Image 1 (cartoon, rainbow, N blue to C red):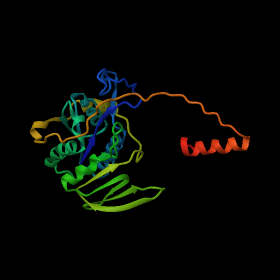
Image 2 (cartoon, one colour; image 1 turned 90 degrees about the vertical axis):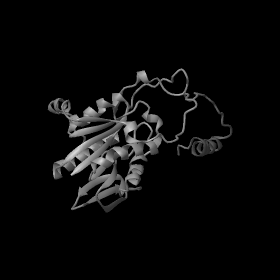
Image 3 (spheres, rainbow, N blue to C red; image 1 turned 180 degrees about the horizontal axis):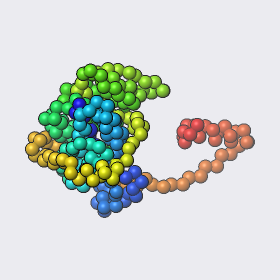
Length: 256
């Protein structure tokens, strides 16, 4: 069974952000980077499926040269090899362009299953996996909490609203977007880190994939929210003041 896992390198959650001098983005030099958490759960699910059914797990990442550190982490955790679509301006591609790049990289591999995280921690669109499935013509399911591979099919459990779940089956190959918390993440062992240095990491050039960037929204200005203070005096009796306070908390502040 061949499983491809799409992973993304994102800024560390607790990074201190400073706006760049041109006001259009943040100072990149201050940021640390890590694997997108939902993608880490997708990788763990792929590794567990491989342990049950055999085959190989391939990590797929589109990003700048520095993203190789995150790819090596996936290899250290157990991925067999990796594909790196290297582009320093990958953030400017937009969802469609990125999905087209991934689709071009995936097609020659002829995978049985493609896993992605439900969404990215930086942008949180939750669209790439679904668009990728459409481009490949694969069936897909989102917000996956459990997956069981059958004979040529896969049964999945989807998380819905209000504590409800949906169990469905679909044919393979398919694309699944994995919900965080589906399983317990493993750590890379010392042996795994050593082996990762010898595993194949194939770099793909955007020009060779034949995909042009699609139009996407541009940021004109980035700024910090203004901090303001305002004091309101509520007059009247205690009963009247309490009623006015409840009304403001309910309809203006919206905390009750």
